[in-house]
Image (tube, rainbow, N blue to C red):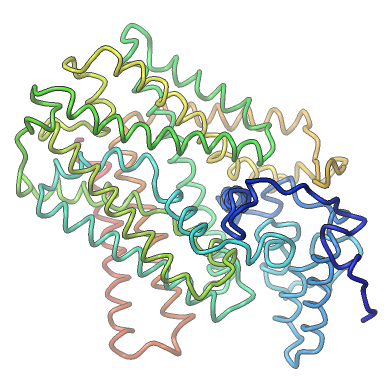
Length: 533
């Protein structure tokens, strides 16, 4: 390789990338505010990135590779070509470094793995060009906690109403511990198989393209369910504020806003979604504060409502399974969080901190809500707060603000991967004129894509009219989806892809875990359809 001068190897002095003035946002080195923001934006792009080819339309332009990135990628190619294993795995790794460059074309045939053939996938670009080995342990923990802390925690108090203190505590703790272990299992698989990046890659490595399609379908249902939950949260909350208005009106309103936001680039959607994190924290703080604003029961922490130590029936316990599993459904993102780490060896530590913190936070919210409303707990705490007349008059306006921001800020991000999947599936981007603006690929909007997004959001609106119970949707997603993607599938991957490190005892325990995961999914799903909330 020819020698490069310092001027060409420095990203700040290269003719391609311009120097940037330092500011207080750069203080702190790897954990500076700017780096946290960059890590957060990457983490948002991971949501659903395993679903299809060309999931995101704003990949990096080949013209914006600075000299440092270019040299790193070239070194990757050299390492692969010099390696004795410069075959399929070598091409996989080298392809990830240059797969978005038009000047390099790698051989591809019907025997080439799907992981190789997914050109322009953001997750695949991540391994060498700016999206890999960047996040520190604190940044990874922040992104992982943000992934797990969703609106499902608003139903945990209802889960305790169904299961009682003893069983509810055990179930929430077991769900947290189990999903923490399976997240580490995904990390161990990635450690052994350097060519794998995403959850979909692992699924393909386990069972081929058909199994990868199955995983994609499960993700689609998960994201669609999350979108329906956000629509229901918005409509249910504002119906309580404006009882004379129809819930359908608010569903149409939030879906219309989402349609407009769907045309924004990912960077802006990520920024908007950040307001959702703030709104979630604000809602939880307000709920706790409300418990000290009155002494009247229900609704007070000063005069707790009657609660149950044990469940009233087995049916209610089964229904609560999905509710307690729902907050832990972030496993599809964890493989990419692993690949984005500066020091992947710290992944297990990050999982320990993430799941312990999230468990404590979820448990506190569940306890607060159950103490405040006891056997009157609704399927979301916000319903209890909004209908309680013992709180000051300013409580409802504050809740309405945050309950309006939260669904709107999250819906565009949640629905984006689904939209990208069918736009890719129906090849809507193939005949578009691709341009580059500020170093980013820009695929222009077409009439066909405009209509297709409108059709999808109308479908989302229709589903929200069919499934109107927030609690039942949570129970279904937690059972059918989260038990599957967080317990059953990771253990199946473990059984095959980590077979060489499994002792007979661990193999038996893994099989037992798969059986329990399947049982929880089947029983909880049945309960979410049959039992009354």
